[in-house]
Length: 187
Length: 187
DNA sequence: CGCACCTACTCAACAAATTGACTATGGAGG
DNA sequence: CCTCCATAGTCAATTTGTTGAGTAGGTGCG
Image: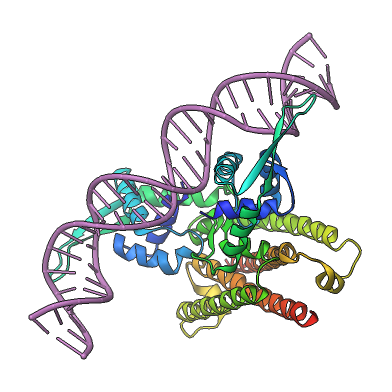
């Protein structure tokens, strides 16, 4: 149900092809609504049929042709209506890693440490990427200036959410590693 | 794929029926691996067939009979193996609310404020529940004592993760509300 | 006494997500 | 020259996940 609106929201940034969207979903929207290319192509088809987006075929030389999609007025309206409504379902996190941690006792402590280490460096990497995106948003201005002047701040707020989440993950991993080390030293 | 291990991990706490598991998944495991009762019943059936868990029918008076499931040695081993391996897929967050925020510009600012307010109070509620669970874990001991003496600390670490996540959500919402207010006052 | 709600599930149907393979063309690197 | 990677997708099969209903006895409330 919500993939529909995730796609519409992505098209607020402007015209895009399915392929381009699959890239966007990989880096930005993937942070709160993951989708595979196949899901996107299917969804775009449906949205176009329902008149929420419009396709425009662009002939390309030395490349396969592509279809660029734009929001229609109807699409924009539907997205607006959706954005104003309270969410029907709460956020869902699905994390294999946490299952492993839940079940970690009785396995090799060293393996557990490695898991946390991996997660930590992954979170740090993500945080660094987020910070670069933030620089691009600000584009030289201070945050206060940006928040005062920009016409769209939604994407910036979700970015702040992502940054908050990942920096907290980093702190949590660091803490867990200290705890694990203390338990290891104690034996 | 991972629901399997989520169920096995839940059974580490001891024997449980499908119905009991559906309650556990609602409060604890739901935080990182949501599942509906139907999914659980299907999964339990499969796990029993594969010999990873064992069922024992308990006759009850004035209640429908229930089947209690326990981990077998095989199940315990498979779970251990899983817990040691690096995760095949990264954590996935699916959050309708964030789509709405991404698309919020061009809708009623008051509606957006209400969304954040709602999310905020929801996060605070969850945090309070987590803290109560934490009290139960500690059971009078200090955290340091608990972490030194307890045989299982996995569930405590995932709980800490949940607490970190929700308290960061609270801070993020508060910040967003300040920003929204400033934009509203500015007009 | 009737109604709603709790325990403890099962069944069927449907929607969504995932996986893997397949079609094309072009450019880069060895 | 050959292979791999990037663009720009499509198709089909399978697995997961979701929704709604049904069964059946028990408990609590007014």
